Length: 87
Image (tube, rainbow, N blue to C red; front, side, top):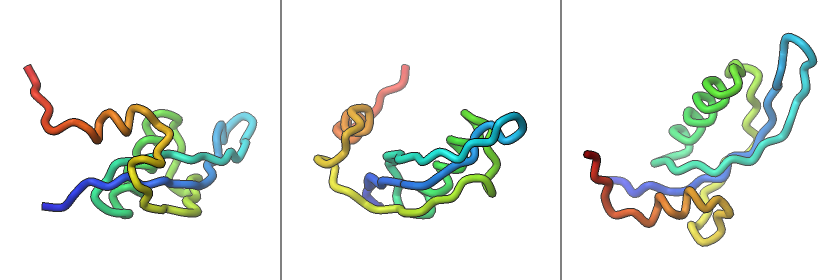
């Protein structure tokens, strides 16, 4: 069984393509098994939240980082969990 790692994904995305297109930089921290899965998460996230097409998202860098360097508190808290109990 593989261990879940934390990846830092840097890139640009074209927001508001139909009215006033603006290309904005982003840095997103993602928990994934490998770089391919982290890339797919970014495409799905921006597609569902902002309706951005995959060809309008340009990923420039994907880098695995240690958990103590992650500034996102939500990612740190999720990584500390041993198990999740659903009721």
